[in-house]
Image 1 (cartoon, rainbow, N blue to C red):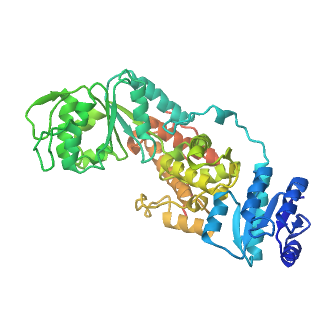
Image 2 (image 1 turned 180 degrees about the horizontal axis):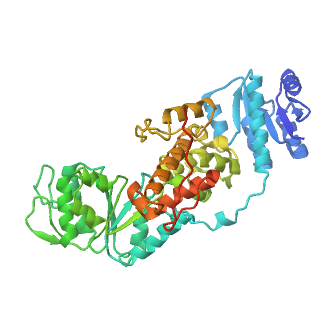
Image 3 (image 1 turned 120 degrees about the vertical axis):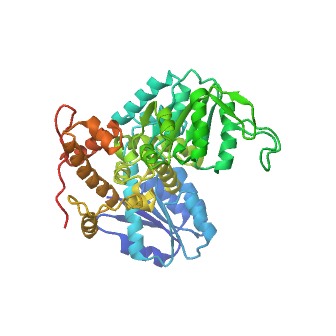
Length: 493
């Protein structure tokens, strides 16, 4: 039976709390001084402590520090009738499980104590630390061992040994720059610089100067000659991020560099030579931009000599535990925590979320969770509220409510009515089932043709099919030689 230790100098408070909290499944012991409380911590090894901030022989905060020395994993809830902002902040900074003000709401107190006892039970579980000990210490590491990521590693290995241009496609936050840096690192240009520029973050007039440099006096503020990125990266690699946002004028100049490695500085007449390898990336569909006349077709073909499609995090959820472990290990020192791992329950919550922001969003979520952590494991309560509730954005969803196979509005209403969480993820799966099924049927089961018609890589298609198969075993394995498809979703109405 778990034990709760209550430390308070008011006899009536001890009496009330003992009678209110003690049950057939919870034993309550009390102490009127910090010294007696510390003795009981050592003697009785309680599972949680309810500690008053003002005690006759020692401040509650000092008593808390002393308790931590005896048992660092013991959840301690502080309470006081004289609350101040500084005290509350100091309590949580030192690792208190929670901080309550008197008079304590009994319902809230029972909830907090129940969570503290759950945490105590969870932290007593053995944890395998073997893999963490051997992990990379850099956050600039590509992490993942899924089949989708194995294909990415193979692609990096193949293209690194060459000097061909590479186009990296993928949603925002999937790690496109990390892949670009890996390609450079494993190339024969690794001893030379790799420079990166975000084409979406710089105005057009300044982007040309950043890329090609400028001569003195070529525009207001150009007080001296400046070398551009193509000149500085000669012999190395130039990474053009978000190239889909580049204007047509700049596209034409970049095309010339890719064709003959020649360019002029802004405001200059001298032709300069460069030997920069170009790796470009975008989260946009360049083929669509080409058809819309917003991206040069000839530049597109120059860039896509070798294309790497990065899967979204939701398409490789089997990598999520390893990513979480990686971020915990790397951010512990930065945030000043000593978290060992995330509980299986926490990983389960993370895997139910749709991750529209991909790895970058997960990275931020783990940082947030580490700040909230009061012990050496991440519990579900540590996660941001939107992750726990499965809330994400519908902004990217096109109007498809008129579809014949899936009434989206009715489907969402049904999930809401039934109290479901992770609705975005469930809706994405439902849409995948309908779309993949129809396309695969239309192309007679050819994954190569289906991927082309869908505008995704074959690796992404396979990952989506596998994810649906793992979810409810309703997806049959599909190959190029035999027709296949995804089980239809009954019309929602």
